[in-house]
Length: 386
Image (tube, rainbow, N blue to C red; front, side):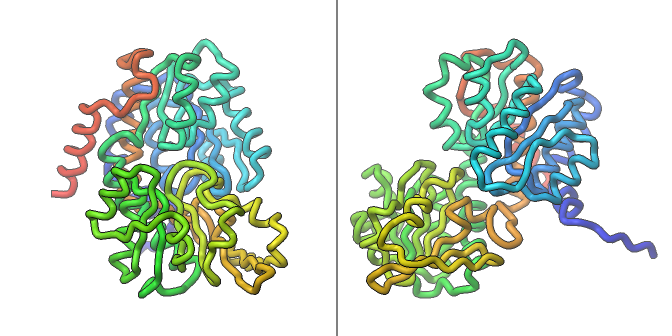
């Protein structure tokens, strides 16, 4: 019997059955032959499965990551495969921006973006051979919509696919934020009062997972219709101030900045835990919290990526992962489930294939995944699952 020491990248690659099948097809059809793809997406093992699928289709890859989530072992593996990577594991926006600029300087033909970082630079520094690409997130769509007239190229928004909404956002983000709370803190959820800011797909999944783990869950959303939905789904829907005052755990999943700020310090319960699940690390204004004159000291649990803030009146509260996306921060970050990312990344691959073949025009600028691609990916997954 021959034994092999395998890695997490091997485990993930073997678990992404849709991407494996897509890569086998792409090796025959070569949709990206002669094209380069610039990527700005979390560099962790599941991304490797996507990037290898694109390379199987003939693409030359130029890659960077996102703030804080780059895993050095993933970068090392990609470079061992001859892939160009401009990325370090950093929380410094300036250093990250340099990596993004380096990708755009290579003038890739297609962009695979996450948060609108690459397309925002391309809008400022346009170049002739850019055909279009994909944007992964709601945060990115919100950021790029004002740039639509300047971009004027096909950009398909993966997050607007119903598959992405229920498979990754509702189920997987909910599960992974729940897992992240346990992983960071090793504390229980039983009987805890949890406030979830945002009741989009990610908020729905997060609220459901904590309720299923015996927490009392409150939901805050700026949209009264969405708040009514949360109410009818059986969640507590207090006004914002009361939702903060009562919370043992505060979770932001909105896609917008400044959801919890230093102005909320008088409301924060003694011992409360704050964590963010949104793409950008600005939903909780951690920097303003650190600078606030009422903060008399901060204990940093470096190995656990936890900060405890002590206030002048004797209260304290805790921030997980510096306010970065919790499921890709902290010790041994795992991100969303393999199956959800297999689905979402197959959507990515098929959308990039559609644009590379010239089958999506400028009118497809910042629009959802085409319905026939959704149907194709859903049928492929169901065929494997039956």
